[in-house]
Length: 375
Image 1 (cartoon, rainbow, N blue to C red):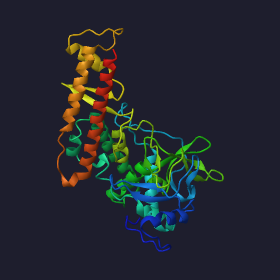
Image 2: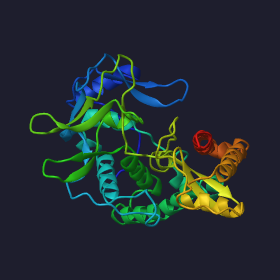
Image 3: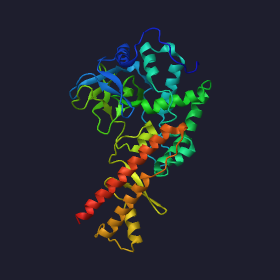
Image 4: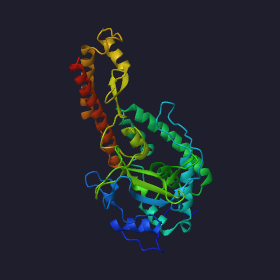
């Protein structure tokens, strides 16, 4: 098998810039070819898919033939958890299957259409800075403010080693970088497709894989076309021209899960986000609207108070917790992030994750303070 190398597109003279996306969609048999363009947000530096014209709710934004996608065979959907039973992150059996399909395709460019080759050229070629599974231990040490993330990242490293070793036994001629890139692309860019019979499989869908995640998505992915032979992106609501298209990568996807699985940290926090409140030698998970009973009990013991179930949270105990939440947020404000040119993106992502945790702590304190004022 030939190693990864820059593609030479000879059958089609694909343009560069904004004009390339319509040509790729057209070459792959997708439609409408001119509905989307790629654009990079000047503030965030994130590339996304933007509308060239307004769409109405339920309009087809894009449909792409399954024949133009890279996919694994339909099989019952299964998961293999990593990081123990409490981890919400998993590396699933479809990942090595889809990675192998990608290795096969890139090892035999002649088997791909010019449109597929041009699409693969647009995909990232290195995830080492943005995916924690590649980070060195000294970078993970900087994430001590979120032990759940750090533990899951370390567990993911072990699972990745076993996964790459398994691929290596079948693709021994490939370098480790090639194997890891195939796994990264499969895990971060595939979408789930369900058949009418109930089976589910993962597919790398050209162009669709470039649509970003949003907490309030304005589009969804499904199967459509004649005979269900296309992956279809439909609008969930009216979207104006030049608006970015967003889909949901998963329900209640927390900030640290986004970072661990997809290599980005959202610019918002959700009800699914939690922050760790560290008090003395104890850690408690707090969210925007909930406090763990264990934290209330711990604080009541520190104050030599007795909390009966019928009494609920007392002003004294609640006030002490509010101060602890504010204090923890203040500590994160000055949390040191090492200055390393070799890990600039990784540390920037950790800084963003830290800010999400600080927001959760402050919001939790504000919500608790409002509750106490109403007692």
